[in-house]
Image (cartoon, rainbow, N blue to C red; front, side):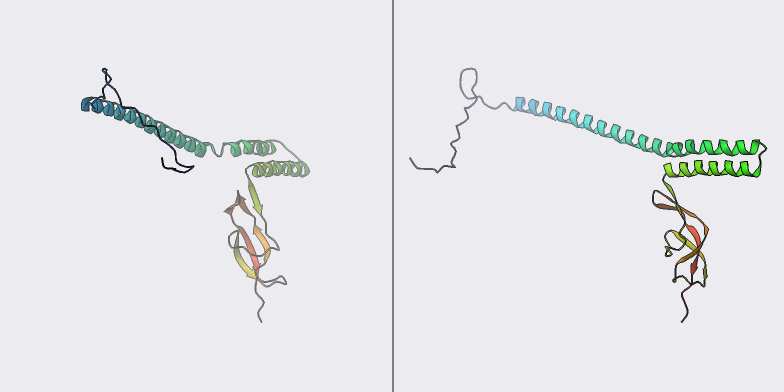
Length: 178
């Protein structure tokens, strides 16, 4: 006998299929065809079920996205309702200027809270370097500040989730001539 080394594995011979009399069975083409057709039908059924499941998941995801878009503003709207109620109440009663100011301050705090919960942030860049992505320069003025610095905020800007909702309208310091 030859030494086949430590990694050589002896494979046992598979027994030949036997018929009823113990002789090797001849392959029956009709039986093989029937078995293959049954397997094809089973695989086709499984594929169709998987395809239908995928389509159902896709439709459900599309419906969820549509619902999210439709009701995305719902929470913000709910936060604004008390602000509207406060303004209506202020208009419905006679009050002194001090009472009116106090009411407006409280209403502004309600609105600021609604903005904070909706992740709406103010952009009030006085003294900052001009950023054309967040600011809209409406005028350049001579100033003691460095060039392209925001000198005055005419109208605050707003960011929604760090995306510009409205740029701040500003005046910007002119570069010194010289």
